[in-house]
Length: 321
Length: 288
Image 1 (cartoon, one colour):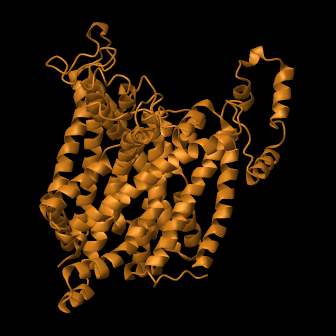
Image 2 (cartoon, one colour):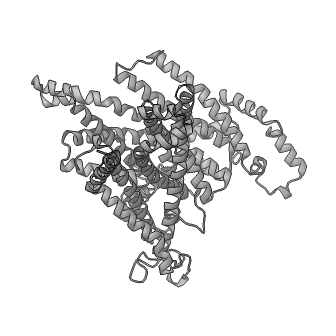
Image 3 (cartoon, one colour):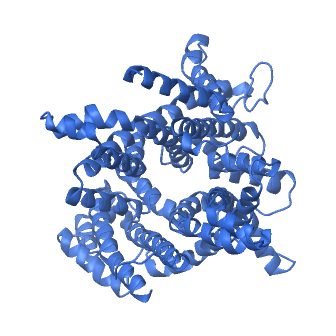
């Protein structure tokens, strides 16, 4: 098992390198001069010497491959350069925003897995019941309503109309009550928006894979032996159905990450998603590069997690190591 | 039985299954209504989605304006219908691009196998393990947002599912006798793939294509919502919801209508896709 993880990690290194090289070159193709962003003033007001000096100071006068190597050298030692807009170290900015996004994603994932798996089991135990039908319609709805719209509707219903929950940021600026409750209240709507899209995916996967397993011969054998329904369901069927459910972990992280861009924009959540959108608008290349690296790493980790979970759940899976 | 007749009765049976699929039928009817409403109807009614009426700003839905008006007094129903043209158009074109790229890659990989197959499918794996949405955002920044770019970028980032399915199907067909016969007759690989193999893959391909339209429409709307998709004065459902963000407290309908139309469209494509899958592949037929 350790060798599997090790091998997978080893494969991800060239993958991440490739992504970073491609993104570095593509970003430099973009129209707009980073020097202009850095100086934050029209070029005709800046003297040619100032432009040349800034360009040299940022290392932008050197050939592209040299610039990339310099960036890479910094990146492996944790120095990702400075933001062009705020001139603060990129690593500090990422360090501030990444935990906020991970918190959002973590809660959403936990809720999606728990609710999705348990509702999917209920659905599969009584296929074509009223509950199954209702859940299957919910699944279609969840797959078809864009997150930005369901998020806005939640803001409208719970934030504006009923005025039950806060809709902006992670905490109130001035809050008389319990700060923990205040933070929790701020989490509800963004997490609900993010989780809803994922619950339905887990639900459908769990339902279909459990239904398939329940149709197998060995389940009939287990029942014929006189085992109780609960034992058959949990020990014999559910455990086996999990094998295909676990592969979802790999798909779910990129999905949650995509959701984070939208959800953080709607709820003004100071995380990576909103930072990405801002950095793209402001053409803050060092930040964009760092965010690409972080999100690629998250996606690669998700795939790794899925592979490991798969191997743990199914002893028949043997990766050639 | 003659082969043509066998084929005809297969199609008839699939059609029967599709028509009995209530959700799929709902999807087809809904989609027909939406397409007729967004493409020909605005032309015949000659409504101008850009006619500004500052005296009638943010009028609630009523007899005069069925969907109310927006912040510039423009008729919101007309704007929703014209916005739908762009959303549906982007969805279809992006899907077509994805199907073309995905089919080429998948068919090549499946037919030739060996090194070509593993190279192409590793590339597909690589593509899937990228943070694609962020890359789409960056691509939009570099290329300047426009409808054509949105279609291209979405098409070029959503072909991997198509490639996987086509490869699997082609792989299954490759060792069939008819392919061996076609090869023995001296047909070129491209002719065998196009004329003999691909027609047998049309079924599963239609299913992914339908589901791809749904996801392309969703990606476009998310891009436009973030301001990196369709640009004003053009509007899609996504950019309309985006513009409604600050006004929905005064005028909730500006956020509700485009979102409902968007969701109905996507739900219809998903219903049709699932219906097609159940109709074309009787093994997965479920009692509904």
